Image 1 (cartoon, helix red, strand yellow):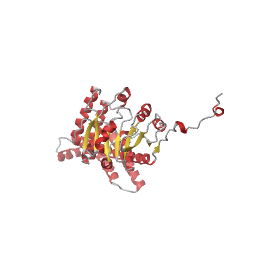
Image 2 (image 1 turned 90 degrees about the horizontal axis):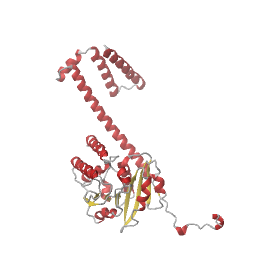
Image 3 (image 1 turned 90 degrees about the vertical axis):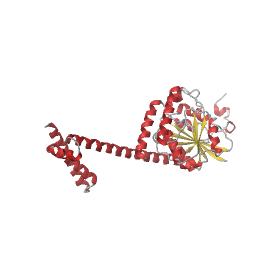
Image 4 (image 1 turned 30 degrees about the vertical axis):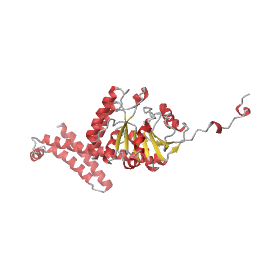
Length: 129
Length: 231
């Protein structure tokens, strides 16, 4: 019973977020559609658990729970892969930006003045007696 | 006269970089020397030490934030490419290289024997700690399995490249794993490659700063990830 309440709250809040986002952007994107399918799916699975058994049969696994676990793990792995890929690209772009700036602002180290070129301080200037 | 750029990546090396720069050869026959120090977002005043060293052959490039060894080496090579340098040598800031080995690495490039030269500490590993030797061989093997080119010191910081290599090598890795990426790039771009024996000077400081075996695990993981995502 607890899982039904939890899943219902999660699905309702998430669907409300999806709807709110659609109202704000007025764009029905693939991402929005995916979230809609995922959260509607959660609601469906909780209230019509038998539906997953039919899906499991079609997938060739023993139970609906196994089928859902399989799908969830596969989807999460794909997401991690995608996020890592994006992260690597962002890191690379950051390095490229910092590199371009570093190369453009290179500073030459000033040469140490040679001993003969140094101005000799008079006793009066240096305060020596 | 050919132009040689010595690329020194430096991250929090204020304690030793002054000495490392002072020990660099003043002249090498047939080349004019330009030293490029890439301060990789140091917070210990490394840049101030470099600025105060009084050697106008030195150019200071600063990363606003730390990007890692690969990021810094890539910046140094980008500069060498920009000024059309004939040769570039990468050189560690921690004082572990013998300055005389710069000439040893440069030799085959000048004579046209090779496009890329790796200074190998393992061709004559006297004085190298045992655990370092084992760790290095492990990474050599891993680098070979991933990228198909055998080298006796895939993690060496002393490497040399001619202009063809400078122009063709594209570094994409930001951290320590860049050492293996150099090997991959040498293979990908079909550069003529040679190893020369160099001597490593191990001090308490360089042992503490250099690659530790536990870094090796990170390197392996990052190389695997790179292979998975990039290829």
